[in-house]
Amino acid sequence: MTAHEIAARGFDEYVRIDGDRLRRALVAHFGVEIGTEAAAEALAVAWRDWDRVQSMANPTGYLFRVGQSRARPLVRWARRRHRFPDAEPSAPTRDRAELLDLFDSLGRLRPLQRSAVVLVKCFGYSHREVAELLDVNETAVNNLVHRGLRRLRNLMEDSA
Image (tube, rainbow, N blue to C red; front, side, top):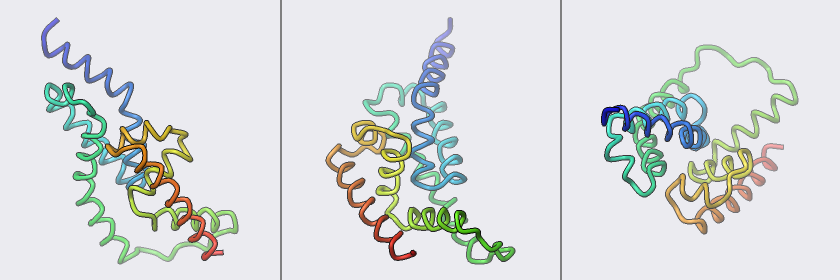
């Protein structure tokens, strides 16, 4: 087996184990469209630089930061696109309106708060897992979740 095959096998193993965690974190941070694209680009960087990435203490935290960097132009483009909508949105039903209020409120949280809240409360990640993924300490995750939930509650009450 060549060195390239061994390195590829390590990358495949990494993607199988941690690739979904990375994608979920970036989707929680940026939304489905941009987060998925950012995760794909971060994994492309991991593949290209696998010799260096595999030796890091926290490769997922590093790749999360890479994904954040790759998402910046996509976020700017999305903001411009939403300034000029193509069509009027349809009238929402009550359930859809509540869901839209939740998504709007989540979107108004700071990105790290939103990521921590979604990963802990929606995906069931432990504070330790989120801390490793976001490359912050557990106390920071605890604060992000606590403050994020409080702000989310206030935003939802204001929209009701």
